[in-house]
Image (tube, rainbow, N blue to C red; front, side, top):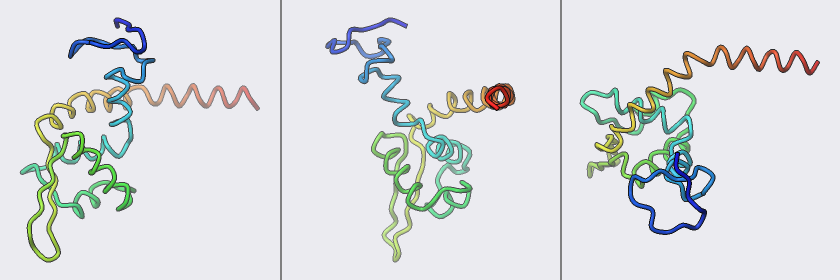
Length: 136
């Protein structure tokens, strides 16, 4: 990773930044997508055929998410251009969500993170249990 001086202007698109700098692209992305709900919404929408789901169906497919948290998560994903929102002018309005091409491109790295977690969480859990045992 290359480093930059905090406050450095003129970084070229695609240039690697300093993760400690709040303007670092990696840090900004992690701030936006670093919640479990965001990765779950992306996973569910990526696995949807024909690729579009209504709000209520999304909520049914994501155990434990509240209506408010799903709404906030979807608003953020729409604002960031990762999800599109389509409203049918019915009463009540039917609202549909779909990943954009940009959102679809995020599914692969999130999937890799899930694979890493499934592989390594037992080891991390073991380490935590050992640390707790040492404290007692």
